[in-house]
Length: 49
Image (cartoon, rainbow, N blue to C red; front, side):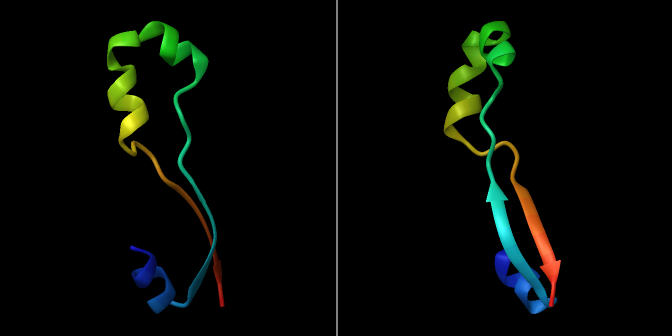
């Protein structure tokens, strides 16, 4: 994925992989393992040039 961004002339400045918020941990304790061991969301900050 990052190769595709650089090939399209984007510069990657940040990658974030947030963890579940406390409310989700309290509300979905049985799903907590799946939410914390595999990536669910990746946030990327890209710049041109």
